[in-house]
Image (tube, rainbow, N blue to C red; front, side, top):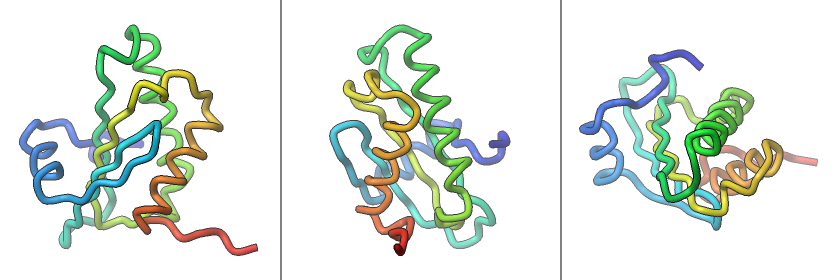
Length: 116
């Protein structure tokens, strides 16, 4: 995931919080905001110090970035996403994190449900 696909500025985070819609489960809250003129999606990550030490927080962020990298063809490209990790996210391994994020994104109707 390259640098252009990340939301870094506070004002960009605030726009997504104010104008976007939120969807949640026990591990994550996802805010989504549509941007018409955007070629590729952008994600911003928020992992509080309450969740754990730096190693834990960075691991959660790596898992989220990798999940979006694997889902990049299924995720809508004209959106900004802000993902907030909740306390229970610290106990998840990568596969559980991916499953949980897919669940929230399906609730938000951002990715399509896989047909069997």
